[in-house]
Length: 160
Image 1 (cartoon, rainbow, N blue to C red):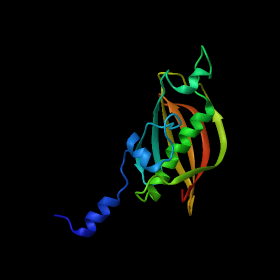
Image 2 (cartoon, rainbow, N blue to C red):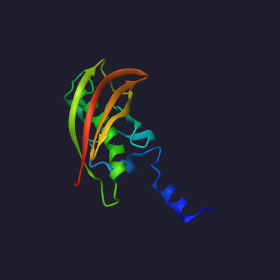
Image 3 (tube, helix red, strand yellow):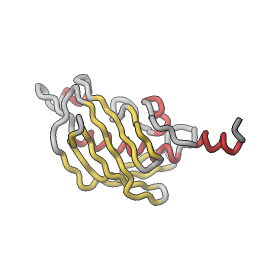
């Protein structure tokens, strides 16, 4: 049997995976604007991988582009920001609803290839700096191991 101090430490450990329901506790985003389905390989606020399965039924495909659906690049950046925001939200979660997460910066964004229905994006995010309630991450969006987009993203946690 473990001692009470050990039990408290175990309860504070960050989960290694956040499923969609868990994301609702740490992010304010909801469908149709939640751009990440789950977050895996969480290492504190240092790094993580967000997963988004792209289906032909995504609402943005109705207008981007009819007859040749391509995921908008700005929504890939949003998925990267939400993935990073999820681990920031975990660090500040208080149990009374998701914290406010605001985008601060997007730098060095590059788009390498289109993302199409039926593909799965992995958002590989790595912390490059953290100061008070602000974080900066370097991210790569990958499909089947190939980089499709990259950027540096800054986010800030607010008191909702």
